[in-house]
Length: 446
Image 1: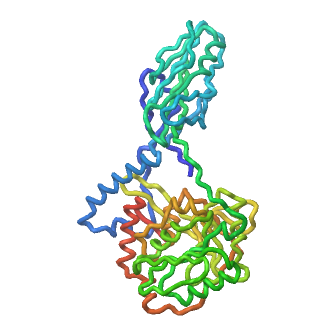
Image 2: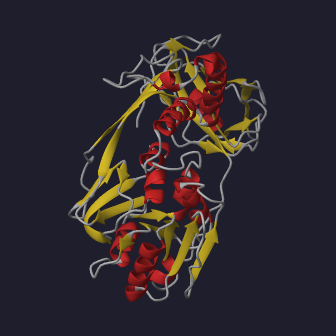
């Protein structure tokens, strides 16, 4: 989501102040969730003052970690003789790097002079020769002058930036001035990251692991596993099981992890995903059943064709549950507002029946490394699904597709299972208080 942040001009002394930015967002306007009880209503009044203080501090630190302090708007002047890199200039921390593309294009003058200023590093010109005018070598403020435009641009081509702070992900701003012209361009300071790749092997068995969270329903679980083995006799299956009295689940290439009793839905998902060694995993509930048309390869083909995708969801029977999450940041005091609406965003080009969404049904193929980065919050034990996609909003690219179908078994839940599947009202209230702090939300509307 692109943000245009407009407010206060940053004061930089000794420079003219044309109205080009950077502009920062002071505090957005409050948001509203109509006909929804605010999330702070679920927090005990005795705890509210301390909780608000802790939430405000955590939100401030979150803004720093995610680079929101660098989230500014810079306007390019309508006409300037200065040439400069507007975006894409990246340096590694504390390493000297040439600034590409700097030049001056102007009519003849007796003397040409520019000034540059940075805040998180120092500037210098390489190989300065006798007679070349450079003031402020290895300082935050540097000026260059020459009576020859050709020599002047040669000096600019040797100008370097070195960050003086160590940070793996931040940004500096360079202020570049000539006479009454001033421009600002960003310098991205970024530690290079190492790729983490999964060897896809030669077939679906080396690309995908099937994940199942099991609880009490062993009859349905065995039907599901048998249906998987009918079409995929060699694919790995991981079962995370927090049943009260665990039963053995055995078979070739099945890993059965026994958890403490009733640890919950998301704790089981986290455990299962943590054990995946393949590029993708397929999520299925323990009461699903593979049909003749349930083909994992069809979902893999979509992921492989569109490498930006992180989650591809299908249909459970005739149910293709998918949704948008309409999110407003709100202001820093009250927090944001989320409304879940049952619609998609736009078609996925080249794939009929596939549409971008923010969340999908429980039957989906996930990109292992992307889903691990978001994770499943183990606080949410019983009724939780949308909450994973709330945490992944803006980080996971999600698609829902018609025709990628799995079956749902008919069964009658035991009273014991129903008591866990439908938790008391107090659980829902605790969940809303959790969202209030964790997701910095004023309200959430399903």
